Each structure stands twice: as structure tokens, then as C-alpha cells.
Image 1 (cartoon, rainbow, N blue to C red):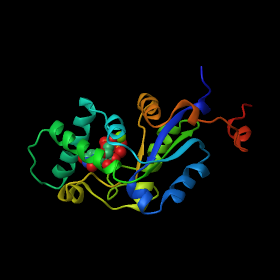
Image 2: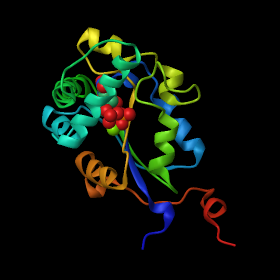
Image 3: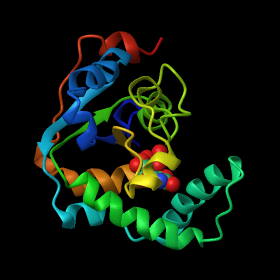
Image 4: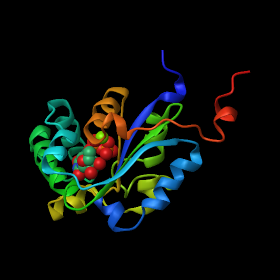
Length: 194
Ligand code: UDP
Ligand code: MG
């Protein structure tokens, strides 16, 4: 069995984060937390890669559509469109968005990194993401604003949400020889067993 410190997650700084010059700011939060960068690149995603990343997966399409519907319901706005068809539309928009200009992709490694990074990035919509989170601190976009503009929510960052998705997504963005193994100076302290 792998050591707990070997858990990995994929993070992609989307085109809005790169264009707004927030790469260093965001990356440093993860470094300071103690996570190890084991792979990193600037990548101009092709449509093909974007389509693999935002896979045509029924369950995910429905969950994405449900988010939009819930945000409208919370505002008392009627919307009778099927979640799946909303999800399909957003998937197309996401594929265009993530491939519109360069991204910075990296793989982080560390104890419970998948969950912790999700906590650090905050909720999907920046207008309601908590302060202190990346989306909460650096954005204000909302479902309504994005929908009105016919684009996906600009929320700066993608992070894998489960062990399975991390494995799948890392393989899409990185070749095996682009991932590296080395020691951080604080590793002995962080992972010492009494
Ligand atoms: N998204 C959107 N509208 C929605 C749901 C999602 O524009 O109603 C976009 C948003 O950019 C989000 C991405 O689709 O980051 C992927 O959606 P997911 O539900 O996986 O959210 P995340 O895991 O990024 O928080
Ligand atoms: Mg997601």
C-alpha cells in the first residue's frame, strides 16, 4: 500500500487565473500548506484534451446542470430545462473556455491532498465561495452572470474531486516521466512517525 503522503491531485489554473496573473499567488498557497509540486507545466489545452478532461459523463452532466438549477431556484427564477441538457451546454462552453488561452497545470502530492485542495479552492461559484478560499478571495462571478453571458463560471481553478478523478485527470494532462520524486525539507517533520 502507498504511504498517505503519496496521494496526488490535479490542479489546473484556468485561463482566467493565468490572464489575471494570479499563478504565483495561487501556487504559493499550496506550497505553504505543505503540499509538494511533483509536476507542472504551462499547457494550451487542445479541444481534444478539453473534451477528455470534461468527459461526456451522464452523472457529471446532470450534477453540473443541477448546480445551475439550484442557483436559479434559490433566487426564485423559474427554469424547466432538463439538468442534463444544461450540463451538455455548459460542457461545450467549458471546452471552449479552457482551450481559449494557456493554462498552468500541476500535480500536488501530500496527505489528504485531494480533499484539502477542494477545501482551499472553495465552492464552484465565486460569488458565494467563502472568503479565505481561492475562488472566494479572487473572484465574484456567479451562475447568473455566466449564464447571461453564455459562458461557464470563471472560477480560476480546477481541482480533482476524488481518487478516481485524480487518477484519470493526471493521466490526461501529464505523461509519467513528467512527474517527479524528491524530498521537501519539512517532509521528515510532517510525516514523522513517533
Ligand atoms: N460550471 C458552470 N455552471 C454550472 C456548473 C459548473 O459554469 O452550473 C462550470 C464551472 O466553471 C465549474 C466547472 O463547470 O468549475 C465544472 O463543474 P463542477 O461541478 O465539476 O465544479 P467544480 O468541481 O469545478 O467546483
Ligand atoms: Mg469538478
